Image 1: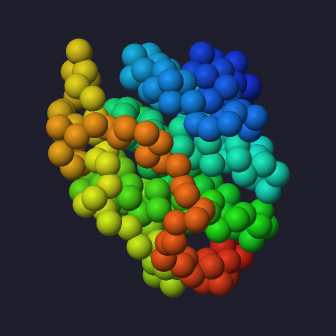
Image 2: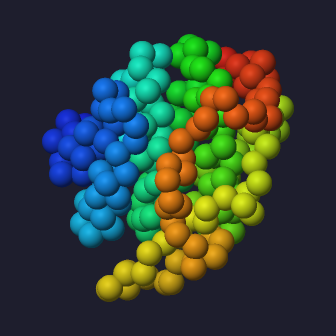
Length: 218
């Protein structure tokens, strides 16, 4: 059975917030809602699991239909990874979830280049950040598989990116998390750090390689 489970993922408190924050009619990202989502994930036992279910549902139901919703959802996902703790990281880096992200940018959905680059950049960033953490190797495995098959990832200065930062917890729930980057830097930079400017040139993703690989997988 899939770890994502069944039921309406938007019926939970965090699921409701995710549905609101990824509404395609929003003029831009709602950073207040995004940070509320992080707070719920960090302060409730079911928050990480419920959030990943809602994010996955939002992505799968919007793929090939509404890429504004997809981009808002990827922004929520990225913000949560940067601001939430180990339980959420374990869910995100699960190989099944990363495979869902890869399917999202497959030829079946005919996604725009901006979405393909965003997904590949997130996978690359997480693989680099979590490469030494045994529980989080699912994303590393998918990243290495894609590279082995010839997928070229967007050129990203990983050192210059905002760090993946795990907030301090009032009640420890295990070993101290490893901080990626400088903990003094803000987990969410000022402005809209995860918005992608389509006018800003980026290194081309090798889409023929990607599409060929995805056609073999799916």
